Amino acid sequence: MNDSSPPSVFSLHDADPQPGLLLDAAGAVLKGNRASRDLCQVAGLASPSRLLPINIQALAKSSLEQGRAIENVEARIPGTILMWTFIPDSGTARVLARARDATEDVLTQEEATRSNRLYRLITENTTDLISRHAPDGRFIDATPASWRLLGYWPEELRGKPLEEVFRGNNVAQQLAETRNLLRDDGYATMTLEIIHRDGTRRWFEIASRAIRETYTGAVIEVISVSRDITARVESEENNRRLADELAHTARLATLGELASSIAHEMNQPLATIVNFACASQRYLKSARTNPECLDRVDDGLQKIVHHANRASEVIKRLRAFLRKGQKRTAPISLNDVVTNVARLCQWEAEKNNVRIYEKLARCAPVITADPVLLEQVLINLIRNGIEATVEARGERKPGSPSQIVITTCVNDQNETLIEVTDEGPGLDEQGIRQMFQPFYTSKPQGLGLGLSMSRSIIEGFGGFLDARPAATGGLSLICRFPASQSHKNRITTTEIQPDE
Image (cartoon, rainbow, N blue to C red; front, side, top):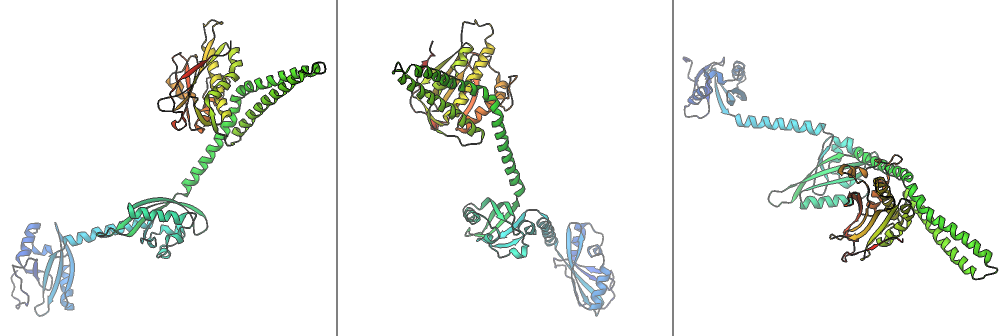
């Protein structure tokens, strides 16, 4: 790099911390300062010319021809990014090249550019609406998804209050509650039913986060992500409607399963009505000669009316149940219900050589339920117990009757229990799990809906129907009612045996 040219106005100083080079008109390096030589050594470069941009010849020529400095020309070497400035000296046809280390600045800018590109890619293509809001809810900005979801372009939304865009019932109240949550917790979610700009109804799920001022903690901006969940909500509503229809179908189907128990229940009052009617006819024939017979006719007619009304009530309640009618719940004494049911099932029990025992709590527990439907459940449980007991009787002597025990009590958790225990073959753990499943049955002619529907009825009263193996080897079916309905007194039971 021998230089015989006229003296340059430029000088290179070894004390300058920035790399500096003196170039000729063709861009060749005439000399360099210490910083440029040190940088070459660190980067492993053989010549200072490797520090310059690859188009150095064109840059030097342009700088001299135009008589102006060319700034911020990038050159990359291993581990460093340099920004060069080329300053011409027209008198000597030389160029002073000075560089600064711009590695951190350039990498930071590139990262910002990538982030901005990713942000634009997400915001312009996401199906969810991302929006910025002032603390009072006015739109600051929104992504292009606003057109599809709301019917507004982002430019139209700017400055609009949420109440003007999200129109619908109770929207204003929900928005006010959300603002309070954002102020207190900094995060809030809500589900809104709104009216789209085109008049259609839409469901939105909106998650919002508050941006706070550093020192005061005041909310200065809100970022929200809104998702259209209309399809999901409609699907759930359709599923609910389908479930209601299936439940209604199941109630209709269970009529076949309950028909036998209803027939037994109706047989007693009808047979009683016929007996009293026949007796009344006989007393009427004797009334002319014996006026006292009229009193017996009157008593018979009263009993006919009572039993006819009860038969009518059973039919009405069953029809209401099958027609999705509301249950007529009222406080009822469990002991009275159990006694009544035991009396109704006595005929079938005696026919199958089964005795029904009642163990009733002296505290007379009371729950809120529909007495007729509860009776139907207990009748179903007792009839199942009778059938299971007969099935398991096997080698039992015909003269030795089997037992069904009905117990009412209040346990230590103040839950009211009705327990029906048989002497049947019982079930294993898997069988107990399956017995309450709809359409599962071990009976050749059964529909598998009796126990499933019985559990549904008990759950409708706020209780639960379950089963467990009994000490007798059979099964105990337990109707469990919550503590809120239980009697607080100590549990004592009185055993009542049927008439001999």
